[in-house]
Length: 380
Image (tube, rainbow, N blue to C red; front, top):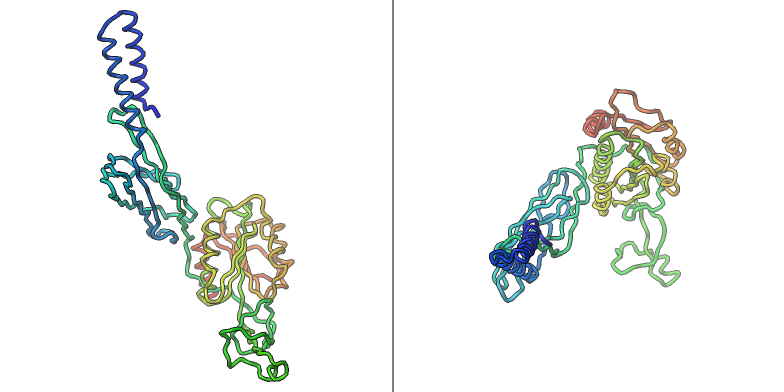
């Protein structure tokens, strides 16, 4: 709580008191008395806490890399007396940003806007607001926290890519999906009537037999389903290659959603989310991609075996770096479960050919921009 000036003042006070006692010199006593008075006034000044509240919000709280975002900090004086001018600060991604709060009358508010850094993806903690008060002599300093922290989510950069290739469906009149989407024209089964169901779908023959309203459940039999798998084993990447892999995975998810395909997303480390053909759930996937990090305790692409245990009739797109061959055996093992398998590699610095995975189409690139260009050349 004591500043450097305060420590010097305490030392000088002790020196003057001792000198006055030894030499019985009144000037020493007078100087010590003045310093003691300054220390007492300074201590009382900083311990009288101003009745201030602080509230902060982000506008917006979710952005893409490079998009603008600001923190709006509103400081209010809820006391009956005016508050003295002070300096507040906000912690943004570990960096302190100063805010000058002027003298506020009773009931007055002060609003400040801080531009937030969005140059890289991630989940960034903003706040809480820190208020620093010092006395007029600069002898004491008191720090208090106001408000709560909020989180800024910065989604990864997305490149223009087409959706994953889906290959051919195995069944034209049926569905290989365990959770077929309703709304098509192909009859699947009957179910109980629910309020709000289309009355044109009532199965009157069943009503005549059972006396209960039954509805025809029609499904979409030929709707492709996509899965994007991100390798999060640290050993697959060097330098900034993992960031490139995240951008490629985000681009494939975005392309699938834009094409109105159901998209499942998994990391080999166990994170997962799904988006429907209408795009519901897409933000959940992007939130995971904003905060995902590689780990040494990760099965790598071999983790696809666990992911594919209950999957059938899905096209897989796996995004990885430059893993050793023994870390790709899982892809070969589960290949029959998928309609088509595409593997995208990033981080190739020596123009070497893509790794060979039986039954899979493999694309190798230097970084995410190079992959996007190669993808466009191959798939349009």
